[in-house]
Amino acid sequence: MRRSGDISETVDTRAGGRRLVQRVKIAIAIMVGFPLSILLYVARVRFLRLTAPNRIGHLAADISTFVKMRMLHKVPRYCAVFVSPPGFSANDCLRDYWRRYIKIVGSPFWAKVLAALFDRFPYLSHNAGILAIDETAHYIDVDREWGDRPALLELADDHRRRGNAWLTEMGVPRNAEFICFHSREAGYSPDDEALHSFRNSSIENYLPAVEELTRRGFWCIRMGDPTMRRIRPIEKVIDYVHSKARSDWLDVFLCASCKFFLGSASGLSAVANIFGKPCAIANQVPISHALGFGMHDIAIPRLMWSVREQRYLNFGEIFESDVANVRFTRLFEESGVQPLESTPEDIRNLAVEMLERCEGRGVYTQEDEALQRCFKALMRPGHYSYGGINRVGRDFLRKYAHLLDGRQPTP
Image (cartoon, helix red, strand yellow):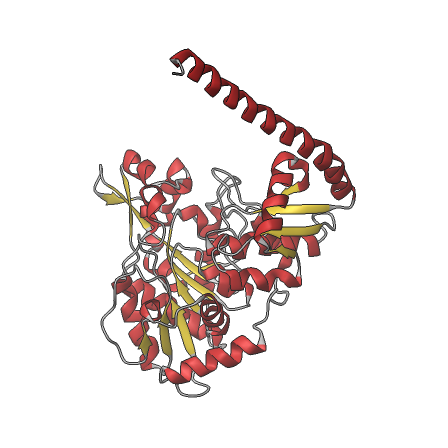
């Protein structure tokens, strides 16, 4: 009979053997990987690291910013590689659209090999993430310099044909115009919901805007994921999030083909943006993100309610405090400040303004321009979208001009 001491010795021997094998593998990987990494580095091959490739907003905006920086000569002419096996990215169809500008490695085997390589040799990586906490996002300067240049991506003919066929199946008349709308809810990312729940908003508050657009002849398609609440039936409105046809390619087609995108504090609007579609964003929060969009976009921030003082904070107070950059639900709670959802009236006005802009009918008075300058003048370096180029909603600033703290606009 084998004694317990013998068993312990056998277990220790096996464990020691496994450790030895692991060390040998590491040694071989270093011997092979190091010279290969030097070769790739000299050849200017860089592996892109995104903030969160499993979030469609970052898949769109992070790579978009890198491509613009490269085209504007703000980064070296890297041979950029994005390692993304199936299921790694939020949307494989959108991922493949970036092949026009970067190399995509989709093979699970090579993805594993290359991931191990640039994890071990970080000088092979290029951080393409746009995330910024308590500082101004670097992409703001990039977008300002990019200006009114053409969109980076165009919809593929096959996707256009298939997408139009789907619209016909859904009863949308040929050549009818449509908009996409989206309001962030909790179901898409339950694992980090406690951190970001302050960004959620009620889809019901968007429906008056949707009804106004349908009254003017537009079809409206609700975007998102199947965890979202259903909306009441409305003529010319498609609740696409609960459609059996929902897919990666159809997500892209709709965002890339709409007249404009009516969104919330969520990244899906970035997909429309990279295909050149203007975005109207309600419920933007934190307030320092209000100018974080493209030249043809408009946004309205949430108002901030002081729970302790039972009053609205004016914009000057917000920008002079840490609340302007707060990005986590807990910090809002600790500061005694509650971000209030955009009202149905404010969202409707935002949508109408965007429609007027799209149709070349947008009118802005001298007072409107003064209010824009007054709001933007409150931002300072370190605020997330300081220097941003989009506009704040016209009717929003008119309605809440009294919250501009009595400051006079810059001449």
